[in-house]
Length: 112
Image (tube, helix red, strand yellow):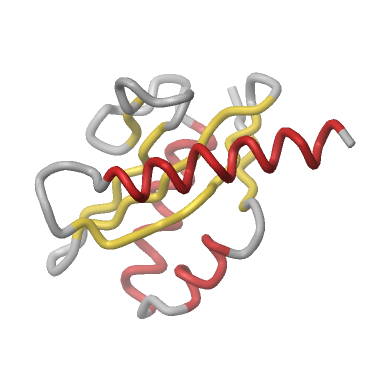
């Protein structure tokens, strides 16, 4: 099974470009797991409970824990919304709200 992964607007691209080479490599590795693995381990990809279909791509490096929030479209298309460096145990509500807002915008753009 191959999923297609795209970024919506430029949130992911800006975040990715701001990272150093090692972190970018790690992000690429985890996104490849999302693309190519039938069953992605929860350690790397997890549905966020009580959200409007938002998933969390988890990239753990030596110095930081990165989260890329995303959602599915048409089954095998993963749309990357926003990214951030996780500093607390729980995913910040404002980041989840932003991902849900971006999902609504994406669906409206797609249907127009």
